[in-house]
Image (tube, rainbow, N blue to C red; front, side):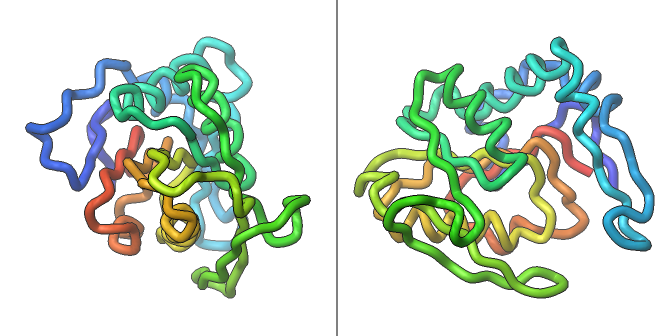
Length: 195
């Protein structure tokens, strides 16, 4: 259930992408385990120590940006709410646009939406209908890949708008939950810290 510090996995064969050069050991050390949150039996991976330390936050954005840098994308998509923190920073570093995917009813203009199942219910997310042009290369950045439902729904919205989903990056991947199985098969997926 643990992975070596600094190792990123992808469904793209390892020989086709360079190894990550950002040392993620300090990031892994900063993740705080919070037992029984938000429910008994769950160990929550708290990333707020990375956010509150300027050097760690910079290193976090360095690591995330490294996975996207050579992709030729013009927009970075982030999922409500913690995904906004990371996706917007990566978009800024790359000089790309930022596109928010929000919970239903939070965007002010015409939207495309999708419902999806969670392990304990269902949810809905939306994207502005004009946020991504047909054929536009985009990359999705989020904080955590767990069971994959939210990321798969967001990927579906990107593709419904005609976007070319060039890849997906997650700061933390809970590999034991096998969330990658729900994601589009030919889209590269990167996990910076894999548990």
